[in-house]
Image (tube, rainbow, N blue to C red; front, top):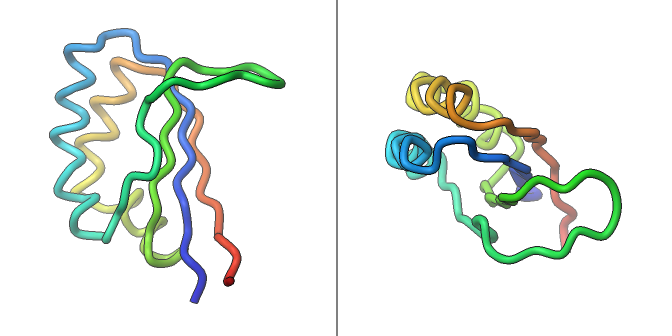
Length: 97
């Protein structure tokens, strides 16, 4: 079964409150087997509109990635993020090696 990835591009308006999102989201990520591959480090924008923070999170499957996003455990974190940041998030299924 191929892994899946959340790819998020985020502009944070309130960095201090954004930390509340990070803390609140952590249990959901742990529950669904998330592994952070990129988390807001330096980036180079090549084409299109780039946001300041870029995150890639690996999940064991497409179902786990979607279940995490839709879970009650993540809902509270998602509400905080909506208050303090603008984000574009997609889930992408990986390829099997």
